[in-house]
Length: 132
Image (cartoon, rainbow, N blue to C red; front, side, top):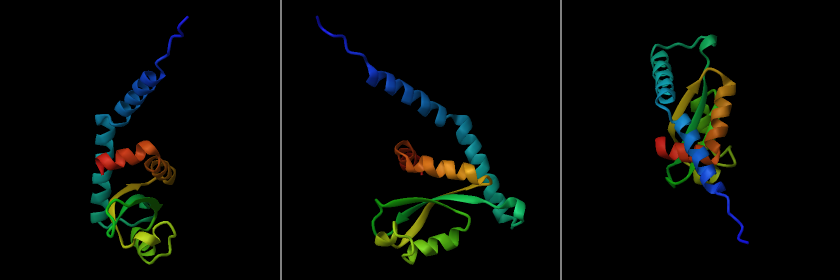
C-alpha cells in the first residue's frame, strides 16, 4: 500500500506568503515612510531635547567589498561609524572602511532592538536586500 505524502512544503510556502503580505502591506510601508519623514523633519529643525532621543538601526556597506554588510544599533551614528572604521569593532575590522547604506530612527529602544534582530534574521536580510 502506497503511503500518501503530505504537502508540508506547500503549507509552509503559503504561510510564508501570508506573512510576507502582512509585513509588506501598504499600510506598514506608509507608516514607516511617515516615521522616516517626520524624523528627518525634526532633525532638520534641530530638535535635540531629551524627549526626542532616537535609537538608530543602521546598515553599513564596506567600501572595499560592496557585498559585505553589517547591521547594528546605536544612539550616536557618527561615533559608531568612527569606531567601525578605526577597527575597534571585531566583526567589521577586516573589511574597513565602511559607509552608511541605510539608517532608521526609532524613539523606542525595544522596537529598534527588535527591528535590528529582524534584519539579522534570514528573512530580514532578504528584506534589506530588496528594499534598502
